[in-house]
Length: 211
Image (cartoon, rainbow, N blue to C red; front, top):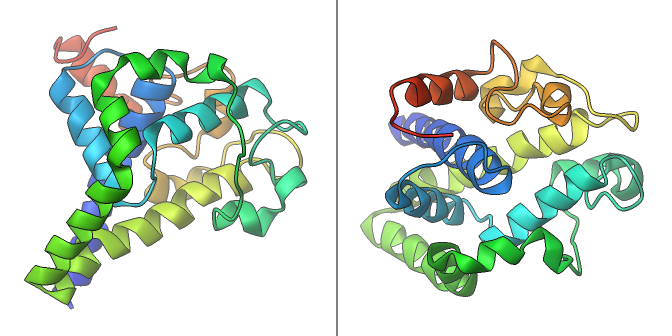
């Protein structure tokens, strides 16, 4: 059963490095600058857990911030329903160009946007060809944890029609539980106990990443 533990540890790497720091703070909010190799790692690993098009994810998140807790919020629990938000059973038919125009200028984002389904399918087949345990640890467990973990952010952190901090979910969400602080405009480090933000500040002080 060791592969279950490895799967969860792999998820924690993806949650911190790729979802919270990468898609969220780096791509969606442009909170820091990093090497193009980091972009590829983020795009590859977030594709692995089934987030599909990075343009779709980033665009929807920007819409969420612009219309937070209103009828135009694409995944407001008040509009969509808590359980649908928790399990990601919601969809957005159209993302206005103003939210994604800059993304089309990045060739790496554009590549994963066009071929995400092929890349995802290839990874699944390769993992399965090695063994079913590798498939479960490499992609199934991280996908399920990401779905529930970040579903908790969109759902629990917006119960009652406003953003709120729920520190208890930080174990699953890489510091994203300090959600109210983020909605106040904090994009690099949300809170002094935000573990992802703390690492990013440490990297910035050492000029490994830049403002």
